[in-house]
Amino acid sequence: MEDGGTDTTDGRVIRARAREVLDGAWDDARGYCYPNRDVYPHLWLWDSCFHAICWAALDDERAVTELEAVFAGQLPDGFVPHMRYAGPPPTDLGPLSGVSSITQPPVYAHAAKVLAEHGMAPGAPVVDGVAAGLGQLWRDRRIGLDLLYLVHPWEGGNDHSPRWDDWVRPGYGPADYHQRARSALNAGWVASLRYTPRGVANWSTSFVVAPAGFNAIAAHAAAELADLTGDGVWAERSAALADAMDHHLWDDHQGQWVDLPLVGGGGSCRIPTADGLLGVLVTRDEGKARRALAQLADGERFAAPFGVRYIAADHPSYHPGQYWRGPAWPQLQYLLWVACRRWGADDLAREVARRGVSGAETSGWAEYWNPETGQGLGARPQTWAALAAVFC
Ligand code: GLC
Figure 1: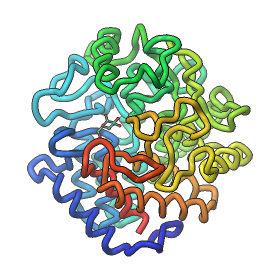
Figure 2 (figure 1 turned 45 degrees about the horizontal axis):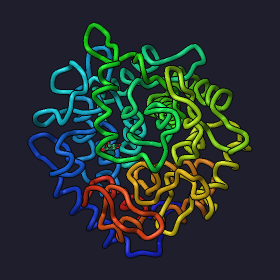
Figure 3 (figure 1 turned 90 degrees about the vertical axis):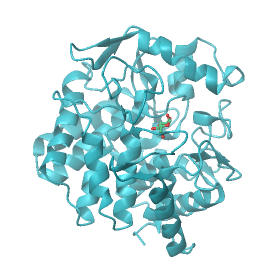
Figure 4 (figure 1 turned 135 degrees about the horizontal axis):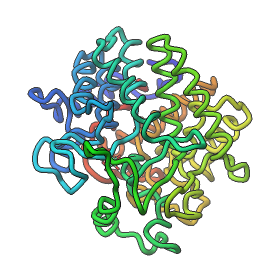
């Protein structure tokens, strides 16, 4: 059991089931897991990083293979695509062939560090790929405020977050939400993308935002890369980005980090979400970290019987059964568990882990689940539910 993990469930059973889920999704020829063979039959950037973390927790060398697979689609300028297609693209995501032209949260640096901690240190090509990937973000996706920006709602990984509601139209709310119609908006998002000459998205005429979640994961990635390589430049970049988040994105009224709209958007960027707590991974301000952590422990905000709610329960946007609009997501729970441990909040980490494990089991190892009842939602089984193995 990891320190800060759970000892209330039979860890061996959980680990065996996690391995079964990953084994069932593994493609030996391609060297990665499909998040779900039927619903998600491609490689997704952050999913594969989480799979690598799961494999490492299971002492399986496929951790290294899967992390290498993330970089197999990397472009010479360092850009890491959010998808590598294993067949026809599911939808238009830009002009690049074989991969999407947008990115996703750079969890690869943390994954590389976790692998090294498990004695599976990734080789130079992966470490160089991590540095080049972050380098591309810092070079091509930074605004004057020192924050990183995104040009498509799916780049944040939180595809249908209510924080994007005002981009759909002002006043858009829970009663308007339909998952299929919302996904169909992709055509419009893609039509407004602008690209580098090589076909990498670098601007949009309708959607540009500096989100709390993505910036926190990127700042954390920079710190992890500095730890892995001893390169102090990345430690400085991490601290500068964390400070920029504290300065520009911290909402003192809500006690969490909000998103900053740059093109389009509006007040929905302030809706209290679980990824708005991820600044705890990197902030240097203990007061801010403690205020955010307190909400993670608060039953009226983010703490639910089966995990971490994506939206605070006391906000009108909270819908525990609706895709990115309330359910618990295992990959965010994992990152928040890492964040708790950074601040020595070990009891809270154990509680996040315990509920995370019971949510994974009760939901049938689902993509996401109702945090009040544990009812499985989305694809089942979904590979990142195997993160429960990390807690055992
Ligand atoms: C959905 C999620 C995204 C994930 C993908 C594959 O699009 O919103 O975060 O990477 O599915 O699991």
